[in-house]
Length: 466
Image 1 (cartoon, helix red, strand yellow):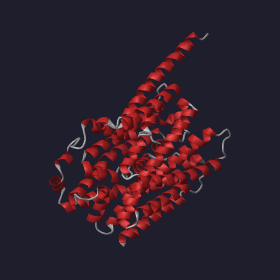
Image 2 (tube, helix red, strand yellow):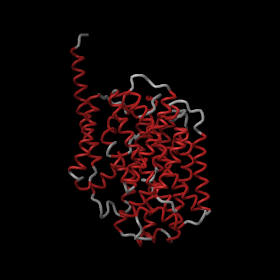
Image 3 (spheres, helix red, strand yellow):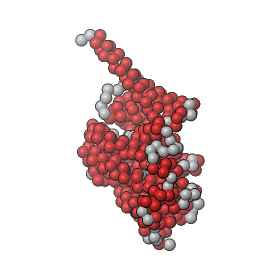
Image 4 (cartoon, rainbow, N blue to C red):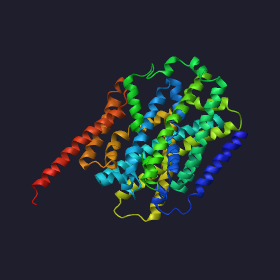
């Protein structure tokens, strides 16, 4: 009863704060990047809350339960990605002042057609990732509150859609900060209480199969492990909501510091969520792996503290879902609707369309959640339609390299074909994921096409009359 009261109170606070923060929003720019004056600590909190979703918490515990700590080490590929973005890309963001989306950056380098292509893949990616978070909501509501998964999905997603639609980026950032504080305390508390109940880490070491502590373990080859590490390194690189976080800082310095803090924070946090999977395996080896984290929370925590930790788990899911919803709406209007129209829309109409798109993507996410079983596997489906197509040309523009439209098209086609052929025709030989292969194909085609186009342009200019 106490736990339920805490959860209801928490959800009510999140909803009220989100709805309240929507006051004064007048344009798509307000909806997408708010007032662009957030400091490094807020960026750290909102970025961390955005990427630590159901896949990197509940999904991580599930995979560690099944396969061992190899999944934690593979997830550190994501941590490395954040650190590299903070080091090499975030300091350059002052060069992109006034932009609000991935498509804006892409258009600067490759033109309107490329912007539309990036807009399509952005909306698809964000919808799939929101689906992963919504799926996790169904599990959480079912395990902790006894609500059928479908109703848990509808309740959780309904709350997120409501405040993210009304409040836009300001609501997302404010609720992310609250959610980050709760999850940063709640999930470590679950691990600590689990270790206390078991009698320490030595009990896990004695009960868990030795292969769970080896890299890459019995179920994975070295090549498969490297490809998994690269999947986490590249899969969410420069995805729309993370790029939006690069736009909302006071300046590039605050953006870089906040991003770096987020990268370092993720290293121990991924270890914590994975270790909860080992606690679950020790407590009940026959448990459904998908229930690893909920089972530990329900079993080892006392009333009251359990309610706070459940709120932390809900925070993990909601904070990621709202960010990707906002990004999907932004990219849908800014990178698809606007460039396809001859006449620009009034600001109020743009804002209204963004809010309607936010609702539509939420509904689409429910479909993903119902159709696909594993939370973390949803992320892999999404990654295969992002990194092989967009990451290389987007990073090239952000890093200031010479780029051409021919390079974008060649890289995009090569990356998509490479990933699809490797995964679906060749069936991922040696367990190596097609994502890394697709990115490699994109990079080669991009570099070759750019060199040819730049060389041809120089030769043409050299023959031109002075």
